[in-house]
Image (cartoon, rainbow, N blue to C red; front, top):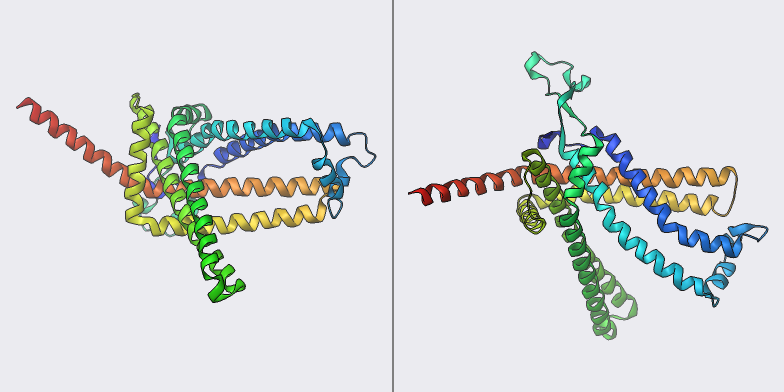
Length: 342
């Protein structure tokens, strides 16, 4: 196993890892949906139209179902929430495997350089270097397991801070709206409220970018630990990942923000396609249901690919910084050893 050069880290080189992440998310979604599916089947299974009545415009049957005194509602809600939390934590393992596959490759077998890149090369040395093959899934999963604790800690930290920022933003927006309503009027005050909410949303997104850079640094460090057959404490790994992310943000946050924003825009467009498909084919069986399933899974696969593409970009940004920090730490350790020997 060897690290991939920063300029060679691209999600398009790792389709197998993306497919693995997609199927992992699909399995998680099926588990989370199981309680709701079982409840709906028990209530509506005997109905001639099945659950198609829940799609009738107006949602009367849906509201009646959810509003009735049924003990199953509380059980299903609690079970689904528990599955969501547990699943979010467990998904850190395949996520870590995906990032490891992006950051490292097999040195025992190399793919030839892209044929298109060789066209017009004046000399053989001008062709790009061969591309490392993907890690075997077992090796990538081992790095994902080793990264589980620091990745889970970063997930908890990022979620808590983002929720706090958005909550403070909601309170600030409500307070500002109330303060300016008399002078600006209801419409303009509401516009000010939306602007304040958007600013806090951007702040939360910026923090999320830094957390993703830290995730990339954590998995990459665990990969180096696997190469050197050493182990590092999860807490220290997380702190070093955060430090690398902060240094990377200070040097190139604009590039990270631009890369993240572009992928978010495409992701929102995919969600819009899924919404239109649901509105068009929802509540129908046969071919319409098959088309809806295909579109929805295509949207999920596209978003997984976008996530992988963003993490590849995060790795390419954080790798040079992380390597420089590690060299500085090694030099400092060497200086400390030399000093102690005098």
